[in-house]
Amino acid sequence: MLQRMLRYKFYLAMVFMVATIGVGVLGFHILEDRSYLDSLYLVVQILSTVGLDRQGELSPEGRIFVIVLIMVFLGGFTVAASIFVRQLMLEGGEKLRNRFRERKAKKMKNHFICCGYGRLGNQTVNELLHFGCDVVVIETDESLANQVSSEEGLTVIVGDATEDETLLKAGIKNATGLLATLADDADNVFVTLTARQLNPSIRIIARANTEKTRRKIMQAGAERLVLPHEMGGRRMAYALMRPVLADFIDKVMGDGGHQRLEQWTIPEGCEVVGKTVKEAQIRNRYGVSVLGLARQGKEIEIAGQTDPQLQVGDTLIVIGPPDKLKTMPA
Image 1 (spheres, one colour):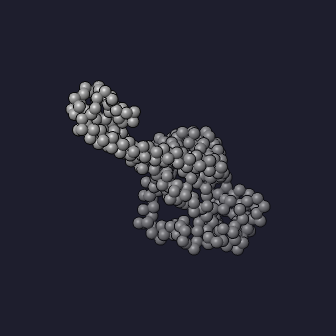
Image 2 (image 1 turned 120 degrees about the vertical axis):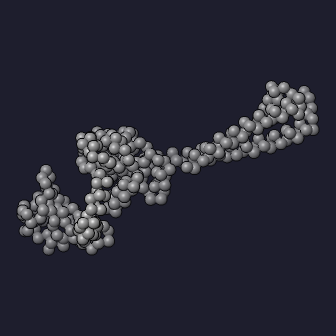
């Protein structure tokens, strides 16, 4: 915004100086009875500080006109020069900031990349930061990128997320996950496809505005799809028809509740490996309750329906106090 304003003022100052030259030519033509060519010659000599035509003395009116002409032109030149220098400083500073952000992003590992910082991207990034994740934001709007970087302290890459170079600047080779939250579904498809090619192992969550693009985005390589309108509608329906259930979900998914819903992946060497859920006594051992179990390649099992043996890499859906969840082995 500031750069556009400075650019506008600079162009205005340039127009003012050109207009001053035109007025000078017209003034010499009228006051000194010179031809337009001679008048232009005199104006160029005077304003370039080379000197004045010595072939004839100027009239008193002409001399006064020269004084006014020089003062007006120098004023416009000073304004244009100051704006030009300030513009160079701003652009130079912006380039340095962009390079610093890019170097910082390339040094990150196991971070998440958010493509697009609209309302959905903003909310998603805030949740990731709450979980203690490192996040790099890609945003095309330079003024918004600068604002987010300065006010929220985020690492922001200015550029088009559909381009390979921009994703590489964001450190996609070392990233764990990517969020495609752009407003246009076609752009999200392209981002997903490009990201999958650059990093085949990255986890990609994409946004879709219509049901028609669901299949295309999934084929492009997204692991999960989010339809904001569908999710919002389902949430409103639950709040209307199942208010207690909606309040419970908000409480366990929020920050201020005494109980929080979480997933826990069983690590190697954990004492529950090889035991069934009942034998593991997870409630007594860790102070949390098991709601379900997710095993790679299989559907999620609801706790109590079966009692399988726990293996390394199994993911348990658990609920418990936040302080207990933090102490579970990782």
